Length: 201
Image 1 (tube, rainbow, N blue to C red):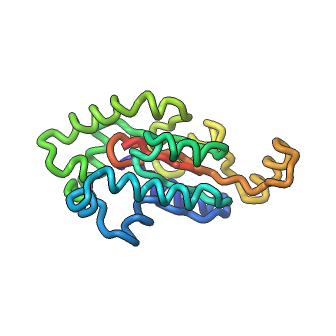
Image 2 (spheres, rainbow, N blue to C red):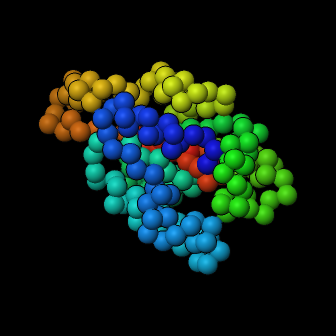
């Protein structure tokens, strides 16, 4: 949430010739607004839906997947996505709140009733720091989409044309499985979120 996972993910997918999937969008398309799911059925039910989407996407290849911030807190999701490139995207709390305020806090269940959204984001980032610390993290604060893509490349993401990615995969793995799914864990503090771009929020 607020780290730019969707914008970065779409651009990354275009650059690498992959399809882009946003797990939150998949859930919304089938079950309605996330805020309504939280209100009606609770966060646990939302996490079950999220787990189902991940289990469906994990076996596929040639994807850039943007996930919600809680996705990589779930051991089943982490196991399902292992073997892919996973990055978390983060930003400082003020930047996250500024970005998500543009969308409206009411659509962010974890922030909807917050008197001090920055403090809530700070707490979420702190609570999730250990889980997201297992993955390479890119700070998106003050960066354009292209600058984030460059940072992902510098961090080791296979960001190039699909032919270049396949060539790298063949060289690195010397196997027939050259369809490498990129999951960028864009780690944005609250409802964020992964080639897997996972945003920590």
